[in-house]
Length: 516
Figure 1 (cartoon, rainbow, N blue to C red):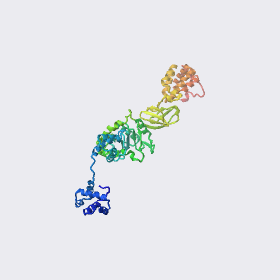
Figure 2: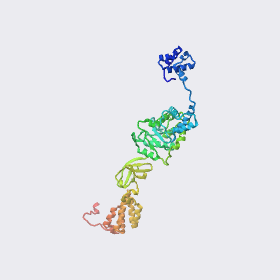
Figure 3: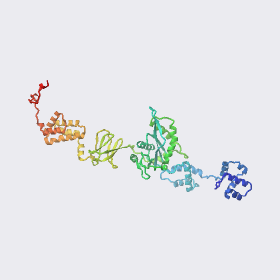
Figure 4: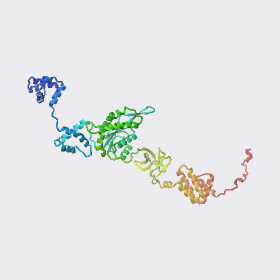
């Protein structure tokens, strides 16, 4: 009512003294209020037409309402029209490039007698603070997606054992439209976290310019006020989708106030309805969440005539970047040392992959997914292969190998057999035995090269004879052929009647009678 707030008892005292015929000056002096304040209350009293006795029967609340209403100014006739514009103004401000000046000019064009720009902004701020007091940032369409885990968990029940398993609840929300995504996952580990972030992007059908996570380990390995260290896998995920990671500052809840507010709403609109049922699998639980989430996103926003889903379709869907053609493949890490043969072993598959020979003896990091294996040295990718899970086998890029290693990889069993057959059929049979008996291909290739190279020293005929004799011995290696040739055993002629010759006489021979 007046500029000076006074108690209801003092108002009663002013009115009583005035009904007794006291002057306004003496009333102000005796009650301790200013003369103008006393005049305002007395003017309202005179205008009401009530007697002091009638007003004195009112209680303090009724008396306060009486004098408050009596001094209220008539509402501005321009205000209802402006209030009807506020929801559309709020929606339009989220478009990229839009500002209040442009919207005020559009407003004043439709309502020439409307509020001036300064009053327009002041009244809009008042409306926005009343409708959503927690919103203090103007979010642009397609700019940010806020992600977090809810503090309270949900659960699934094992159908066979009855065991209750608690699960985490992932929440994502777009800044401009406030369209919300919720998913139950088994843990907060990076594999589950990244999969949930990816599912959120596909739920929205596009990629925002930035993702704002909390400082959980799956996203940030080391917190820092200015340059936090991102988890390498999460950073690789962001690179795949062409977005940026902007971790919220530690101990700064306002940086992610939107998602924290969304979590509170999720408790009432999603947790409450789905907890009426028991769920035996994560898929069943997420199906129930999906139904409740659809209702939540379709419900009109407080103080507005549109829903999150409608606002998303109108202003934010087209502002998101398109999704890549392929989904992200989660990558795991493995540390290993490059072996002397220029290969590195992926322990989980026991498979060997080549790297450039200059890295022999170096410790490298392998990032492997379901389909690919990448090898890094000091953050530089030095090799990439398709993942093959056959154990104790080699995947080799010839460009990675030194000249001696490359020579070995150019040989195949067919090449060795073809070379051996050009010398003699017995040589081919002997080489075939070596290839069949050696466990490691490289070991067999060395033996084959050594044996076939002997043809240049001894000649094809001698080598064929040596292989023929070695086949009779049943011994298959390079040294056997080498000794046969060096000792000229290949020229020995076997006697047809050797088995018929009598045993030689000698003192050391016991004879057949010894065993009777």
